[in-house]
Length: 206
Image 1 (tube, one colour):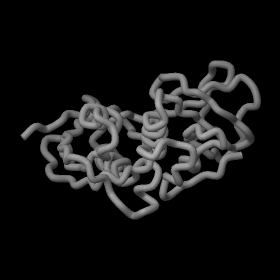
Image 2 (cartoon, one colour):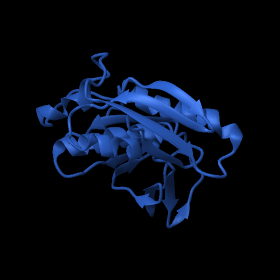
Image 3 (cartoon, rainbow, N blue to C red):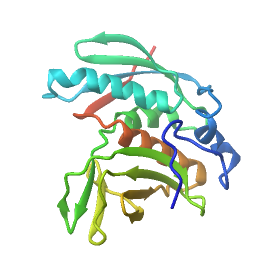
């Protein structure tokens, strides 16, 4: 069993490279990202119900808050929300990577023998397995299927580390240790704060 962290979502560095430390410790230390500033506009997809707009906006901000990105809503125009935020300053591709990572819808679906189940997570947290593998740990209000279980996130099949009782562990194995931790933390906040409709993210220049 892996101990879960609900808030903050990150814990000690453990076996990971020291450069992964920001992703693991910024929330516990009460700090924020110190990389270059970035301004991003988020636009809901056509057909997104007007009533869902406040939920989308608030959950986008919650994702940024969870990652310690110090977001500030600077403009709301014609259904577009523009935030300024700080990048972590850890990996060189953050400017290009981060907007799309934050805009992921977060539709997590558990399947039993290929059939989607109507399950809503109760709690979502991040932790390291004893092997050092970054884990998104999801707790459901009822036990999961013991056999025939597969999981998708936004239609992409996930790497299930373990499913036992009400707990589901999704592993992040993305190249080097820093990239894996980034993938795991981003996936955790996306699943914790799912968006009711798709969103497009665009970098605002200037």
